[in-house]
Each structure stands twice: as structure tokens, then as C-alpha cells.
Figure 1 (cartoon, rainbow, N blue to C red):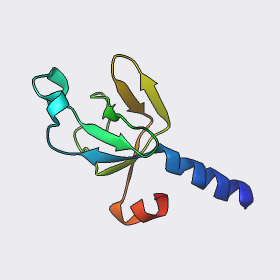
Figure 2 (figure 1 turned 30 degrees about the horizontal axis):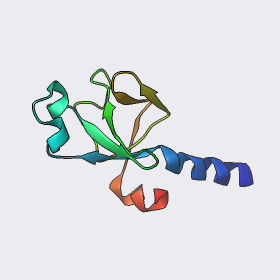
Figure 3 (figure 1 turned 180 degrees about the vertical axis):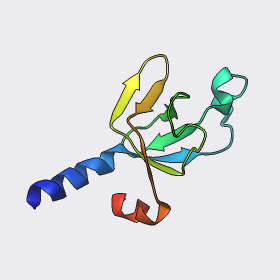
Figure 4 (figure 1 turned 45 degrees about the horizontal axis):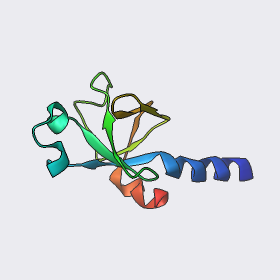
Length: 90
């Protein structure tokens, strides 16, 4: 049971909340309309890959397995999280 609880705590590092609206740093850039998220343990905005099955749904909260840094930081291996469960992660 302790292993399960530890894995659950580790997941909290991989939760992201959707960011809405355009930030000034993104104005005029082609990524300005991209689906953006703020990850719990990352200071920068991360992006949902447009080929993700969740891209068009763009849920408010996500759990992700990988954060890949290319030209932009992208989250991969995403699953949506119901807003009611968000309190569990923070």
C-alpha cells in the first residue's frame, strides 16, 4: 500500500492546468493560439502536442507522463483529470 501512495504523490509533479488567454510574451508568435498548460513543477508554459487525442478537447486539467524539450516544451502521455480531483494533486 505504501508503494501505491508514493506513486500517487509522485504523480502530483506531473499535473498541469490549462492557461487561457494570450500572454504578452506570446503575442505575434505562431504559438499564440496553441493549447497551453502550466505544470505544477515547471516554471515555464508547456504545450499540448497538436497530434494528441486531447488537443481539441483541451481539458482544464491533465496528468502527463513526459515533458519533452524541443524548441518548445511539450507534454506527452496525457490523460484528462476531472476538476473535482484537482484538490488531490495540490
